[in-house]
Amino acid sequence: MTDSQAPSTAGTTTGTNPTAPAPQGVRTASDVVTPELVAQLTSDVVGSGRTANHSPLTGAKLADLPESTPEDVATAFERARVAQRLWAAVPVRKRAAVLLRFHDLVLQRQAEVLDLIQLETGKARLHAHEEVQAVVVAARHYGRKAPSYLRAKRHTGAVPTLTKVTELRQPRGVVGQIAPWNYPLELSVGDALPAFVAGNAVVMKPDTETCLTALWARDLLIEAGLPAEAFQVVLGDGPVVGPEIVRHADYVSFTGSTRTGREVAQGAAARLVGVSLELGGKNAMLVLEDADVEKAAAGAVRACFSSAGQLCISIERLYVHESVADAFVSRFAARTKAMRLGTSLAYGADMGSLVGERQLETVTRHVEEAVAKGAELVAGGVARPDIGPYFYEPTILDGVEAPMAVCNEETFGPVVAIYRFSDEDEAVDLANATAYGLNSSVWTKDGRRGREVAARLRTGTVNVNEGYAPAYGSVQSPMGGMKESGLGRRHGSEGILKYTEAQTVAQQRLMPMAPSFGMDDAKYAAFMSRSLRAMKAFRLR
Image (cartoon, rainbow, N blue to C red; front, side, top):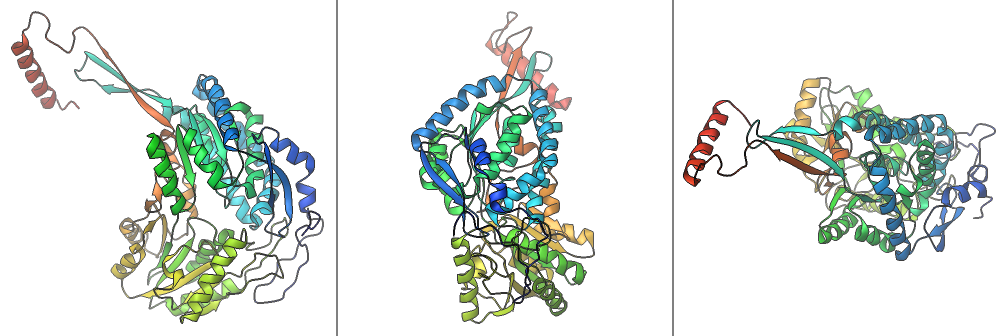
């Protein structure tokens, strides 16, 4: 396909899932990704080679881009280190004010980035807007709360009144960030915001296929007041550029597959630098016998098929109590079959495209293997090249069993398997029977029961009567994975303090921590023993 081939604006109703009709006057790829925009966004990218990215909506090339070599990555870190020292000297409230200005700019100019997100990922516009929501919420939160998260804290000293202790939070230095393709706004700059406000510089490697979105966000942050040199971007193949990021960074933030996450962790460990990892998931949704079946079915559509299932916290396993299973599956299937697939840069489609050929191959393989081994197709199961090269209908499978790949492997596409259970303990055991532990969902009319079940699930987040948005959107609370779903957390205090080093400053006054005032060693030891007993009696920590 050529650059001039824009996303289709035709509307049809061929097939099980109709195509969402496009409004008149909808923008095309060439309207959005102009040579002037590409030149503006890539002017600071450190790269001596050339590469390109493409739109999954059509397969057409979007832009020619700089490509970074290992030497370019080293140069980016050198520039970032110089900038970081100056940026860290800026008072935290002024750094936080940059995030609040960025918040306003994103909302004011969201139409620009929504177009880019759709063109680069293929997702529906409403799902692209979820990224805008997540980024501005994070910007507002850390713009307001960073000064309190980072403020100096007083602690009780070794000897009360004699020892004055202050805990400081120092920036790590230059954070190396490796961001994925599936949420190119939220999982790039959204994760970088707390690093910046903590006083760090960032060298980011976004996925090349979705880098324009991240570069657009960088431009807005600079407009909001972030020094340009403090935010370096490098582009290139993961196996080439990724290890160089790990080799130079003072801390590494990675979102991606569990396999690659292990490699990143090993590289960081060899250098004794910290790392945070959000990795894979095989997330479960539990529909208990007292759930509102209609609401659960509507929620399952959102939980399973947002961003065509290419969301780390989306649902791939659906456990339904046997007493409501038939009613639930009927309603869920009807809603799924009614979903509209679309390519236009406008609201209206219920689901967009997979991001590329590799994802399409995985989805196709999982579904075809499951059906060949006896699983039943309840909905979907069909690729839709008539809409776009990587479209695949939202798919529901019943009767899935091990060793079908879809049973335990992460599909990362619009595919969900239905399983039935007879009691709550069985459901919890089934949900926990995976190497992953990222997100889960519980549906019940009894909120207290939902929270009790949630506490038994081994996942970093659990949502009661919704799929993923409430926990992820509650940015004061930590979000991350258990087991093979990762290390560390984003959001809340953990999401910013991970980008800092704790430093204890202890000032001793009046007398030293040693024999003094004529005491010999024995008298000093006796004095300290009496003091320790007194501190326990007065409940001092």
